[in-house]
Image (cartoon, rainbow, N blue to C red; front, side, top):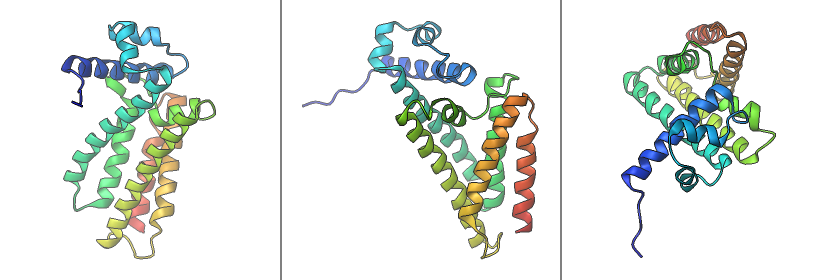
Length: 204
């Protein structure tokens, strides 16, 4: 049987829905954003929407994956820039996350981390969303741990440095800082975390 592939128009429609839903979920949250609003702001028909996504819950999962792919692409560019400097690479990642939170789509509002936002709003409501967010955050932690291991291998850090524990601490700190900055609508805690991590990695 010949395998069918989505048309260019279908792919374009899907991207428009994901982009609009990401923006609205980021700004207003999942529960406050209805499917009708997503459809209206995307400019597609209801039939086109439900052809792409069976439900709002499925859309949420796809938004998380889509945003992860966008972040991965952006962070991949940093990997090329800091290929031989893992400590600086890790700090550049944290700075990128802080910048995107404080200037989402060049707005002046602090939106926080979309993964953290979903975790706070949906983890007790939707098991699939909770597992997806945990998967993404665990992947992010592993990426940081890999950079710390590379820093040890390149003797930027001592052999006794606890890469696994430190990666977890950094993830907790940056997520907590993003939440506090979102609550205060002022970018200050993330800058403090980046300075702390910078000092930690220099002194280790």
